Image (cartoon, rainbow, N blue to C red; front, side, top):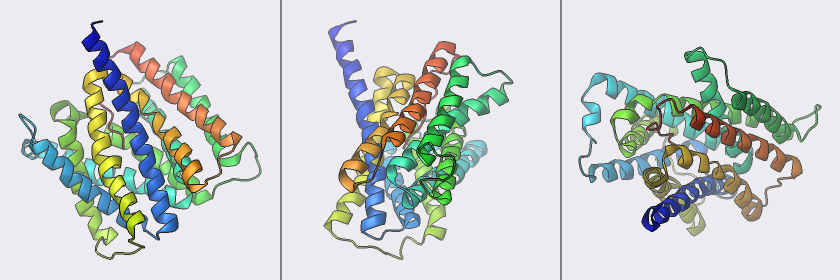
Length: 314
């Protein structure tokens, strides 16, 4: 490996890890706005989608050979984009933020990362194949990890509310749909174009329900900093870093490194917001994150010609 290619790989690894950390911190910023500034999940999701969508679509239009408008020319592509924006982007953002409002950023982020296991289950059913050993192990670890995270090992009670568990698992299901549904679009169009339009369409539709003009909460300097972080660093810059890392180290490695996101969310929530995350919580988190590693390694071994498929995080 030449010094330049080795240097590019290091840059790619740093960018992938940084993007995951930025995404994780955005969840903690959302928790801060909900708990201490009186923000509403519906409005925050709406603002995030609209602002980040406009920025990403604009960014996409400046790229050479951009396909910003071409994505709307065919009815099938336009329909898939609408479905992605409404049922994918809105669902994954709202369920995740609402789950945070009911529990905390650490728990909500870890629960959402059960989503990749649901993706594996979907393709196993679709292609009528038995799961491989790594996938069976991932299922067992995910179940144990979730049990420890929500009960601390007790069969008698939950340590989070039933609503928080429900919305956390729903966010995992939404993440699975969000990962599977736009695959066809991602094979034809730039990821920034797909994600930007998905956010913008989702934000416009959700605006009818989220009432973005009914401003609530305490809009002081701290709130503006947290809100701006969610839009710029937690959406636009993190997404750009992730896409850049994909070109340097490949989508499989970049997606695997995104498992840093729950650790970042948990660590910052504990240090900044004083969220209690005990030994059972960390153990459950470790089990769930191990499923991501096993699934990534199993997928890499199969190499079914899907290296060009990019998972869209965030």
